[in-house]
Image 1 (cartoon, rainbow, N blue to C red):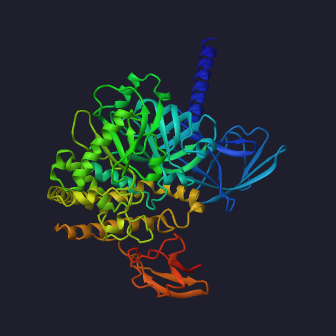
Image 2 (tube, one colour):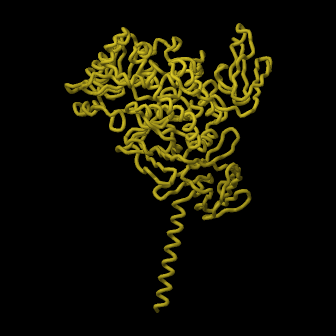
Length: 622
């Protein structure tokens, strides 16, 4: 009896081990399943299970599975298949079978059933590396409502799985909505979300409010991240930080994004007095507050406390964006400021901060050095330096933030935000954004909607000296950034970017493209090229002695640059890799509009190097 009992116990232990083994396998693998004959996979970890749907290219019909970094093997386990028969490249697979895929190889997946017949998918597996994955499921299960209007918001659930497979967050979303202004118009949307409680995500400072930047205009996907690093290196207070992630929404892969802290008031953000809390105490029904709008300011009719000196987070905004906001004011000379915090600002608070900014503006316009009793010199010099370094074409127009603390006279510049029109990305009609010898102080940058504080403050000896000192201190870091850090970021995100570019390649917008070149690495070379040229120019301009920064080396190739018009090919040039087109073919300006890059839709510029074959077209007027 003892012998039989011992064998029974051993069998039970072996069975438990077997069950635990298979549970572990299911918790650390990718499982392929079927729904109405359409394949999808679940990425299973110890604490989460996240669905990823197959994606089909509308142009060529090919299909892809975009897998996150946490997937460590190329093995796909088949889940329950019901009565369906599944074949890959002619070989049949059944439940619990394992298929191993290879990078860059296309497979024929055939699914046959009595109900749906035969379905065939030409499928490629791609996998990210080195960065976390964010899985968001909206309450509606779709994106139609969110994408209909950026103000629309939903609740949902979110899972964040780090690259090592650890599930960092698994829980509710208090809300998710769209965000951004011009960036919201692209198919690859930016988002904002709020957690039920304050929490750190992916090593960033804890907070409730977070942003997901789509990085559409950034050919190298580096612009905003580099600016964040520069601001942090200078110790510009309350600088926003971000980490690269792969975003999945309701099972759809959405691409490579930058998860960032939000521009908001609070601990771990702009850590000043939160007037919103005080306003909520005086106005329990604040969500239903009555708005008001006068000729030069707008806000809400609310009760407020006696001390309304702060804190305030305000933004110099574009007129179009200002018109859509609930709180704000217009200065005597016409500059429009949105009040971001408090979100519900009383009429007294709006009037107070308007008068405060108006007083500063008058001192700035008059060149009064006493203005430095109200403007924080270091933050203004640092913020100017960031805009000037990057040649930010939005400088003074929009996304320019300032904050004021309670019971303080000082206005601080920052945090820096929104740099997708920097580092030579924007090639406008006059080309100022790509010309590394230009300045945000130049006259052609000024317009009726541009805040001119930089232009006036730069004439102050205090400001000029502080700018040059900050630049000189920053140069060793900029050298490291150019020669090392950019390459580290590219290595980190290259697999994710490769998936992103497959997903969005057909959505390139003529005249507003995602980068200057079809190839991602050429866009990285261009970012390096612009930074090196820019730093050499600024060193010369500000009289700072430093070893010359080097542009990316040529790859030794010669590229064909073709010039076309309505009559066909007008001419061909052969340009060495990394060189620029100094003298394009001449044309009759009374007949033709000018040479335009057929990929980007941008005008030809001698500041843009040739890294690939290019085609320029010259259209006739009329």
